[in-house]
Image (cartoon, rainbow, N blue to C red):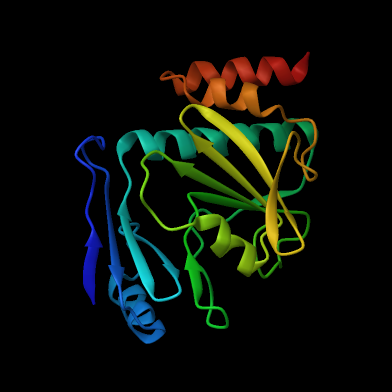
Length: 198
C-alpha cells in the first residue's frame, strides 16, 4: 500500500482524507476489523483504492442535521423509517465498500442495503462514492455539497439526479439544505416541525 493523495491545504481543521492505492480486499477487511466499532476513520473501497476519512465538525453537523430533519418528517407523517447511521456496506463481488454519513430503510427494517443514504461532501478529492453505492444497489443517495442538497435515484446501474425523492416525495431538498446549514439545531428543528404541521 502507498499513499497517492493527502488532505488539501484548504480543508477545514479536523477533516482529513487520504487515498491508498494497491489495497487488496483482504487488506480492507483487516483494516475494518482493526478499527472495530470506532467511528473514525470512515473507509470507502473501490477497485483496490482505499479512502480513509476523518470528518470535520462541520461535516458531522450537516449529516446529523439532515438525519434529524428526515426523522422529524417521518414522525410527523407517520412514515416507518429506520435509521442505521454509518452502516458499513460492502460487497466483495465488484470490490466495493463504503460507510455513509447516515442511512435509512423506509418500511420493514430487514433490508440488505439502506433505501436512502446521506453523503456529505465537504471536501473534494475522494473516491467516486456514487459508483460504490450503485454497485451495492442503494436506491437513493442524497448528497450535500457546497450548501446544496441533491437527490440521486438509481436507474439501471447508475444514478440520475432527480428533483424529488421517490421514497419521501414531499421533501424539498432546498428547504432541507437551508435548515441543515443553520448553526442553531434546536431552533431549526422547531422551524421544521412548525412547517410540517401547517
